[in-house]
Length: 414
Image 1 (cartoon, rainbow, N blue to C red):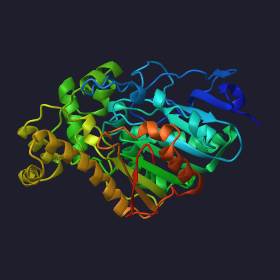
Image 2 (cartoon, rainbow, N blue to C red; image 1 turned 90 degrees about the vertical axis):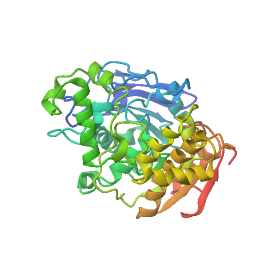
Image 3 (tube, one colour; image 1 turned 180 degrees about the vertical axis):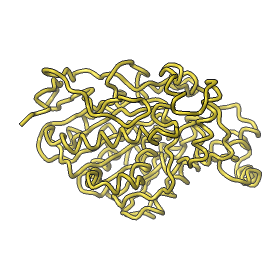
Image 4 (tube, helix red, strand yellow; image 1 turned 180 degrees about the horizontal axis):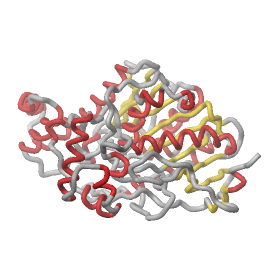
């Protein structure tokens, strides 16, 4: 019987084996479903990260996000790949991480997501790349919807079929993600096509949603995005027209794309979201939470009254009422906008926790008022109490505190 692991050249250090850039699927049509993983002759060099999905650079007011988002667009094929960290001991729980980046940027190769510590703690850790931007998420008549999500499903099927060779238990997979990755997971677990597919049974046993929540698009808002991008490119909003646009031009045109946000009840931080008709998660065990100052990554002085009103219009059909509420609580527009956006993260996660049909554990991550969006990631991937809770959840199905509506306060110290 063919041994896939024998056909990969990995890296071993202190008992942990790492395999980078392992193809799980192939983009044969940018706007089509993922195709089968490409074959290779001989032994594949899996000692260094491979290409990444087409993407542009993102700026966060001078904050260096390379450890979390990666090095940007490293051109090449295949880029639908995954990375594996394992001690290769048998029947270990598997954790599969879906990166964030606003559906516009990011990579499973980013240095933050090194899985060595998870492997040392008895977990097989997998990170992956999926299609981004217009290629992965633009809603086009005649093309499958949520193509980046289809990529993740293809990766999960690859994991089901092959992870046993790397010491993982294919029937004990915890899918976890942050920001866009968390939203993608919610969309995946709400996908009736996937849930009705007998071949998908058992792909995911548990899920962790970090700072994501229920921020999705309906078909109407997705269509507005498609038309806005087509107008910017000077083309018709059709599949044939977009097929003629190069990856480079798609990435360039998407940068700074402004779409009418009056109909966008999400955070307004990206023109792309999964398109979901009905958010109803499969009854897997779920760990979900947010950080105390999510908006601190996005909101910086100066902030005007008009900025607060625009943000409120994304959240409420009566923005003036909402603005009045925040003005009563905070004197400065900067604090009003920060609280409004942070609480929007909380609202998205709470909506899922309250509606979920399975077991739910909730958390709130804090660093004395300084836990901005992404601040929990070093504590998840490096040794400590938060990391231990994630490992325990994946291993025994309980992070170590009471079920929701109890909310566990987490810090770097516990």
